[in-house]
Image (cartoon, rainbow, N blue to C red):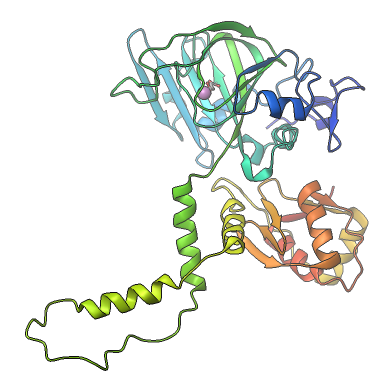
Length: 393
Ligand code: SIN
Ligand code: CO
């Protein structure tokens, strides 16, 4: 895949662009706090030239190759005069419509995991917590292509990367979906705004805001999507977590047992006793944070980690100090004192070690100028061997 150097991709921001955490803010001069206060979860925002003169780094050919790749999550959506069809990848070349055929779309998920510029792009949105970021989805559509009028359950930034897209969006919609469709399409879409986005323009949509984007000629749109765990999925994760951490001693006993004429009946005393014992089980906020950190730092299935050539702790320390360390693109690292979470694993860190790891998680890199006897070296070496942490280039 062709790579565009990152400095070329995002150097178009003016020198005086608003900065946040050392990164330019892609909100067209709006501050992050203004955006969060007035738009996030509330109303859509069209940002003209959010990334000025943006140049697509992921091309239509990349999207077509991804449709055929078994390690990439993709979908092909084809619209005819009367119908829609949707097929999941991977697929054979002959199953992909010709480029000159109108009205089809290729969707490629998690481009940030495999493409350095994609990773850099999603990182511009780290004014939102990592725990809420989902992925970068790229769509390629031929003229007239789109995925139909629909709503998404999560917030999304839709960056126009190549060509034009005609958007129609609508507030306060009837969210009923058309029955028996291969994809979610609104039955009664009433757009209230209508506009065209060009390369570098971006649309922010809050959850459940109805929208329909149709390609005007060949078109690529990059969606920076967010995730929000459902309370149900976290409760299931917490119950699994509790299973491994239960400290409830003792065995049921019935010293006052009476002769039984109905031996099949579940003894009422047994139910009462169990209820009283189980009532004593409590989880507290620290368990919730511990479980949430493990769950949300699980890497995506599509994340690929490349272990380095064999090394030793001593050689690793020497190279890390010289070159610095950088988290692999697919690595998820979060923290909530006293824990540090990395790719679903967690451990307790305190003092200076905690500080060093928090810095690594926030910056996704480190100069690794840690004392040679710092306790985190063996852990960092383990992550290096797993391909979770790399020497900086
Ligand atoms: C697209 O990129 O084709 C559509 C994305 C969306 O409407 O959410
Ligand atoms: Co959408």
